[in-house]
Image (tube, one colour):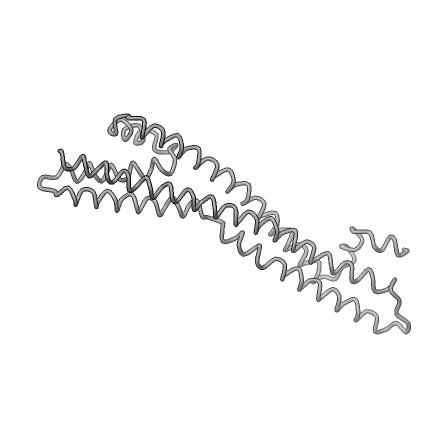
Length: 227
C-alpha cells in the first residue's frame, strides 16, 4: 500500500489503534446524541414560544377568566407551559376563595405559590438536556485531544524498531491521531452554539412567565377585594 492509500480517511480510521478507535466511537456517539437533543430542544422551545404567545393574546383580549380556566382544564394535556401556570394559580385561588373568612392576601399568596411551583416544573422541562450539551461542548475537545496524544505516542513507539525513520512512515500515524481531535471539535462546536442559543431563549421565556405571574397576581388581587 502506498503513502496516498495510507492517507485515505477510511484507512486512517481503520488502521488506528484500539484506544483511538474507542475515542472516535465515543465522540461520534456523543455527537449523535448532541444533535438529537439539539433538534428536540429546538422544537420544544419553538412550540413553547408559540403556545405562550397564543395564550397571552387570549388572556389579554378581554376573555372571561373563568372561561379560560375551564378551557385549560378541559385541554390539560395539550396546553402550553404558561397556560398550565395560569391554571395552577387560578385553581388555588378559586379553592381559597370558596373558604369562608379567607383574607384576600392569603388567596393571592396561595395562587402565587401554586404558580411558582408549576413554573419551576415547566422550567425544569425546558432546561432538560442543556447540561449534556454544556458537558459535550466543554469535554469533547479534551477527549479528542487524549485520542490524539495516544495516537501520536503509538506512532512514535512504532518507529523504535526502524533504523531510519522517514516522514512517510510517521505521517499516517499522526494523521489518524489528529482525526480524534477533529471529531472532538465536530462534537463540541455545535453543542456550545446550541447551548448558548437555547439558554438565551429559555431565559427570555422565563422572563415572560415571571412577568405574567406578577400581572396575573394583580388581577387576582382585584378579584379578591371585590368578591
